[in-house]
Image (cartoon, rainbow, N blue to C red; front, side, top):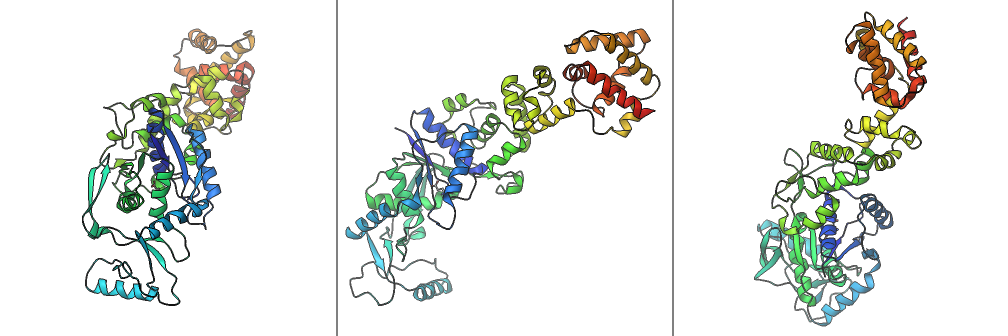
Length: 462
Ligand code: GLU
């Protein structure tokens, strides 16, 4: 069975880069009928892991990604890690090192002066004397001194590390007994039954150390997929300013889960030149073997494009539900269908859409001066008066086309072009020259409100 995991350190929120590897892991597990697990790497106890876990679960929930089983918290597993420390000590695969801070500093300074790689020199590796007094020992693993460690990586191919270049007998448990990062990651991945580790390639340098742990403990090594970073348009690491922020900020900005997930799956993965992927298509097509080898470029226009694509193609009843959070007025509006049809092609985000809703259903707060001047020339006042007269005597109007028909009658009777009614009416109803189709605006606000808005605008002219 394929078991993947997402293993964030509790930074308090889920960011876009993390979400992408989470999505990849999720898709691969689901595609294979496997499991997608969540582990909070909260060994740094100063940070609040509960809050972080909640933030992540909340973001997952918004996006429709659910993890399987209970969340694993590293902070609650010290007893488990201690068992493995003891095992390695008992088997002679790890040892106590009594080097003091000062001795370590001296060693490092000498190595730096000799232009050597700074590393532990192994002085307690085979020590069987009497330990020095007053030094709390750390526990170090006996790492290979020579040879190669091969990371079998599904994205990068085999990555070879020379043991002597990167390894020393690294610490697995500190003087206070607390286990170190790479040690617990390897143990947890094994105990959680993780078969495939998909994570950012900023972790590639940790992997040989984790492999040393796997081998020492006789664990089977999982398959690794180290995913290249996301870069901004200048080719630099994505910063907060570029969009590397809390995933929930994307919700606030009005992006839909479908668009965001589609955007992310294409950051570093492709299937020919296909751009649009539904969740079920992603699940069917995703394969970590096709993760790109080079960094991907974050592109806001692409996200906007995808978002408008999804907005356009979301059925109105679903769209109304999504919009509720941004503009409650939509909930009980009886002309929801006409309203949404009029704006769904015009907005890049739900937030923009919500703004269009209020601009439509509320009278203009102010009028664009230039638009007023331009539109209220010549026969504009007469045109509008004729139009409101027709509206008043019309019985009931419902459809945009019925309003359109009345507008047409006015211009036909006056022998003028359609623009002569369109422009002043638009400014009267919306306060500006731009916006959704007038027929729809009127059908949404109704006859009385249309007349009221025209009258307010006319009063302003006088
Ligand atoms: N906790 C690490 C991070 O948040 C991820 C470790 C891993 O995926 O192995 O970057």
